[in-house]
Length: 283
Image 1 (cartoon, helix red, strand yellow):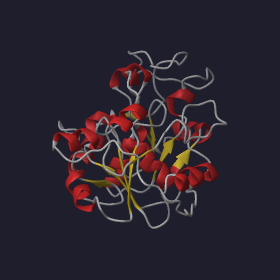
Image 2 (cartoon, rainbow, N blue to C red):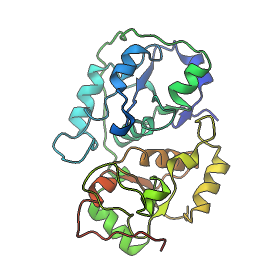
Image 3 (cartoon, rainbow, N blue to C red):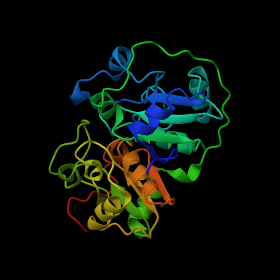
């Protein structure tokens, strides 16, 4: 099931750890309520050779919304400084197993880079298996990167609003069922509760097995279909701020589905505008 363009196992990474053109990224990111410092944790222990990818910093600073996709220029400059460029196979992991790494996988895809995969089970699985970790900073050499932005992989609020009205595209929400139904408060202040009208709820953790790895493709398909998702339609993934939505995008890619995009603003944007409709019941 290892696929260097979507998802690779800890066994695969262990076999390729010394490959000269492998680049490993620690993309750990946490909600404030989790009270975890991803950069500090990275400095204490990371997979050998891993660089730290700061999701909040490598973003569009011009936007008031959290960690929106970076500009081409910013992405290229940050990757060059990290020694990540053309000809590299990139593997991304995070400290929760599968939470924020898929967001960086999607960001690379957005920039036209296909040789990128998420580490299945992430750092928790790697450490549980007793595999090597280190606290040393990596040796970095500049590497040129060619970027070609794939605009079809991202959607803005106007495009999502149109999809919600036309119902010609499946909008799939990765938040918990309680947040989707408006029964639980949003972690960000000032946001309304509920979901985009017409959207379907596939909580990101429903795509995981008990050990934190992603379910097999047949099981993934069953989860989407049980949520009422018509996989023959194009899909837009969404969540709270565009992070866990990328887990849905990764799962769709694992199913061989390529006509999917991500709503970058997600509920952080939709939930703040009183003029946008909000639903709390299935429709």
